[in-house]
Length: 602
Image (tube, rainbow, N blue to C red; front, side, top):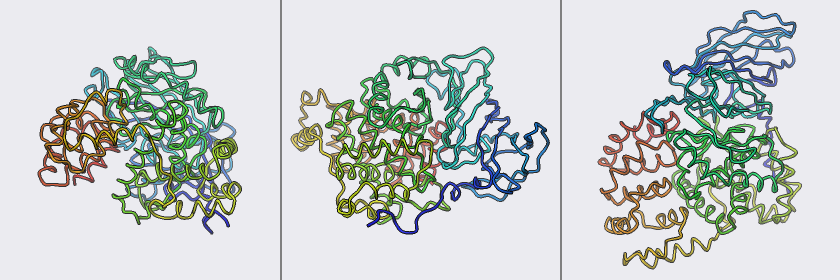
């Protein structure tokens, strides 16, 4: 019996529903980016110099663009002659943008596209000094995933197309420029920075940030960038990073990207992290003083293998990036902090997955691992299905074949497919060789990959640390006479689990009572704040409302924004409150965040 669904093989490198490019005809091999970051006009302008490979007799290369102004295009022949090229922007749409058709011939070696971005480019966020920690200098950050690279670079913007790149970036002299490449560790005098990424990467891993950043070394191959006032705090929080790298290498092979650095961005960054090679972008919401939230670093580090090294061929196979990464993340945390700790993470994920299933509907095709996102924004596939259903599927496979055999399979998978793309169907072919017929039947791969909801054979994580939390909550919830001595050594995950176990909604007096003892409204831990404020809104606990507003104005991470705005939007009074807060908060959010909130409050 085969694991593979019949007739599902597609060469997605040349059949990507989210890219106009036709790499089977002409493909980018190297990008040299020569650009200037103009903070006054909030645009990037310059030239994308694309070394290409022409295949067959094609007369054009097609690039993806969105909201770009194309000033001119030149081509260089293999004999060095450079001349103006014929180009046209084709018809496009609101999701994919417009294809850029450039005429080429058998002698074309390099295409030079002179262009500028729009102030509304979806990949770019221009922060005012007031929106940064230091309040003195502006900041620029990019977010290219999934298909936003085309809003700041004319490029073949599909995960199945890889290229090396180099760059020269001009920025204001008081700022430091960083990319997903070899990076400087201090500012220079002229504000001109040079970058090189010799490993081949897809466009969604192109990243740039410009700001008042300083660097601190953690080990000889990893360190942290942050605003100067945050630097020492960030270094102390992330001190376990080198140990994580070593633990990861022991499991699945040598780290392939030479350095692993982390950039802690201002609070408006829309995600927990972004796995840009060599330079993870991370939210400051993980910097809480007790290293309790560094599993996010383990996640982004794991992407150095799953995603960056072996990449989903297109966004319909997104679970191959994220399910593998969550699995690897929890294995790193188990090696670092023990099985009971990693099981806490798995249980919290399972709770989040249940909420996602309720939102999407258990029969929704969006709860399949293998998605069909044609005609839709690929961000629609960025749900807990890819991450957590994907994780539990891989965990089930581990439990079915045994950890030793599974680890050998995964190590070979990363090694044999390094710097290549992977489809769901190709991966299932590989499982055919691993599993016995009895194991295939027991796992029920068809239900996991191509079916809705969560199959009945989903693994059940267990944690004694959470069992003690459940017992404590049950013991004191009704009486309300909470014993603080029993909670003195709880970590963030235990507190989140404690609060999630409260009824929804809880009576206002119960919420007020627990707040009087544990002072959750004054918490500065974003994970606790996020779940606590949701409980407070459900209970109409007005004392927390000013803190809710402060939180939403100052934090731009979509994970925290969406549940709170959705909760407020359930009632007319709540929606009025949400709109009032949002008027203040929206200018602080990245486009990825505010477009999501716009949908909730429209």
